[in-house]
Image (spheres, rainbow, N blue to C red):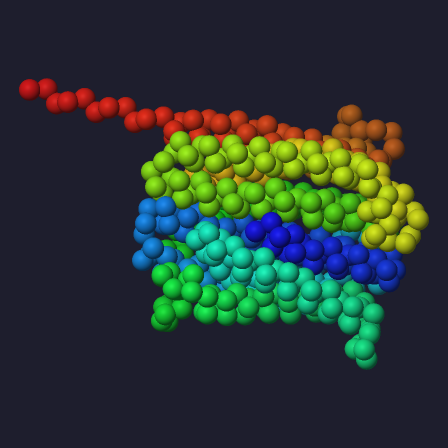
Length: 446
């Protein structure tokens, strides 16, 4: 799962890094388009993650006969969620008209979003099959298909961004075409793998046609929507920062997006631990073993924290090399290096909060993480970021001059810290409560 997650986010890294070699304007267009698109796509990941928990509990309880039906209904849910996401992604481009963008950057970023949105239905259905295969402990197809998707994305970018081998030179639009088509190819590859691999025979979901069963789809949506809102709270805070930073010019936007893009790449490691925790915790609870579920939860949190220490040190030591790998613009490099210091600082809290929230979801508890994330990012990160980054008069503690991107990143560090503390406390309380033996029932009086 880790390799698969890194390969998936590597597509976004390739888009930003390769357009960064064209011009700062092209990089800004892709950065802004990606900031809007990523909000929707990460929310879709959260909404579709309900199948991970449901199938893991069915595996733990030995209810393999019901898994095929669950997967078929999850695919119907994915088709619905993907179409809604496609519509919302296109509507989100209206934001570009109100943040003071240059007309050319606005047009290029909007076209990027319109094209890439065509891959949303395929992506949502892919995530349904992703959750199914990881929850039955089959993670190899996720790795292989994601690596192939990354290689396809890099090749298609090289052909379409720069116009190599006689292909049209599309610039930022080439990134969108490559990514959208890659989503459909990855879905087809996953369907083919499930069709022919022996590991899926006991739970094979494509034995017959089955229409949508709306009560069951609604039940999965009730479980998945709070997860989607949780993911939305975090990624929309980062996306909102990208849009607010846009008023400070191309250099600020480009540096912010590079630092955010690399931090997102590193974040895939604790996120992969989190997906594994949902499976392990769900299977343990399905077996009726809450003590093992608690143990798995805190092993996962510990692994995430240990990795975050290494990633923070890596970013601190190699921040100049990271900036140079993305762009040749000296001004963008210099600002990016400063922002990467904040990225190193929030590694610990970011890894902790995603691990703790994933473990809580393994317990089929999704509303409390949602409430905590909304508080942390919309109640702390964005207000503090606006106070420092924009320095408006209506904040009594605003600095004399706007701190631009740096101010917003300070807000993000504080919000992630609040989320980490509250989610860890919540996991500790929930897992201890579930691990307690049930009180004996008193014998009836004779």
